[in-house]
Image (cartoon, chains in turn red, blue, purple, yellow):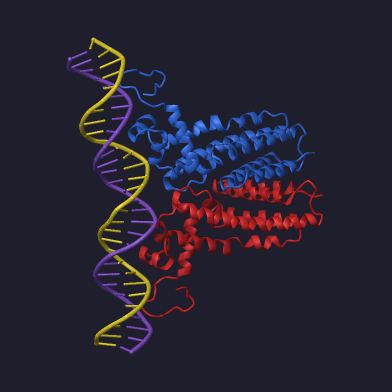
Length: 203
Length: 203
DNA sequence: CGCTTTCCATAACGGTCGGTATATAATGTA
DNA sequence: TACATTATATACCGACCGTTATGGAAAGCG
C-alpha cells in the first residue's frame, strides 16, 4: 500500500515527473490560493490530465498538503537556520531578511503561502486551514523556546517576555507578506524591516 | 436614476430594511470572504430572495463595495480618532488597542475584513482587491503624515523615518488580525500588543 | 375600478466546480 | 504472442456558481 520505494515496474510507465508536476502545483497554489486554484489551472500548469493527477496525488486536498510539504522544505529552509543564530537579535534579523528575500523578491510568487491557506475562506478548506495553523504553531513554539533561552542568557530586557516577543515578530512577518502580496514596492518593505530591527529590544 | 433621496412611492413597497440587510451581508462577507460568500449564503442571512437582492444592490460585487463602506464607517471609526491623539505613541496605542477590541473580542467576526479582501484569490475578485488596497493606501498616507508631524515635533529618534514606522505599525496590525482569524486566544494577542507598545520608539 | 409600477417567489439559464467512468495505449511477464 | 497491469485521453457526472426571465401579488394614482 504505502511502499513507494518499490516502483513495481509493471504496466505502462507514467509520462511525467511527479516531483516536477508537484513543483508546478505548488506555484499555482502559491499564487492563487487553495480555493482560487481550479483543477483546470492545476492540470494545465502541471502538464497532465485530471485522471493522471488523481492517480498520482489522490485529490485536490492531498495535492495541496504535498505542495505544502514541498513549500516548507524548499522555501522555508531559512527559518531553521534562523533559529541557530547566536543571539535573539540575529534570529530576528535572519528571519526578517530571509522573509524579505523569499517573499518579496525573485521569481517566486509574492507573499507567504501559509497566509493564503490560513485565510482560505471556502467551507471545504477547513482541513487546509487546520493544517497550516498546526504547522505555524510548531514554529511558534520553537521561537518561544529560542527567545526564552535568550532571555535566560540576559539578552532581553526584563519587561519583554518570550511569548509576546514571538507574537510580535511573527506579526511583523505576517504583515510583511500581507503588504508584499498587496503589491508594496520592495523598498518600502525594506524600510519596514529596517525599522522593525531598529526597534528590536536590547538591554 | 440615482435619486435615492426621492423614494418615488409608487408601486409595491419592499418588505425588508435595506440597511439591516446590508448589515447582515457585511457579516457574511466578513466571516467568509468575498469568494467564500455565495449568493445563497447572502440571501439566507439577509432574509431576502435573489431578485430582491439584485434589485436593491445591483450584483454581488456592488453589494460587497457597499458592505465595505458600512464596515469602514462603523467598524473602523476608531482609526479616525486614533489620528487625533496628541502623540505618535498615543496614536499607535489607540490603533493597536482599538484593533484588539474590534477584531479580537465581542461578537463580531474575528480578523479584519480588509485582509480577507486583499488576499481574495479568485480571478473575478481583482476589482475587490484593488478597492481594498486603495482604501488602505489612503489611511497609510494619513499615518505617514501624522508620524512626520510627530518627528518634526521631536517625538521620534533620528534614525526612525515616518514611512518605515507606518509600515511597521501597519504590519503589526495586519499580523494581529491574521493571528486573530487563525484562532489565537485573546490573552496572546494582548501580549502581542503590549510587547509592540513596549518597543515603541521614544527619544 | 382599471392601470401602472414595483416587489416577491419560482424556476431556470449557461458556466464552472471537483471528481470519475470508460476505452485505449503502452509496458513487463510468461 | 497472449495476458496482466498501469497510464493516458475523452467525455461525462451531479452539484453549485452568479445571474436573470417569468408570473403573480401589493401598493399609489386616475
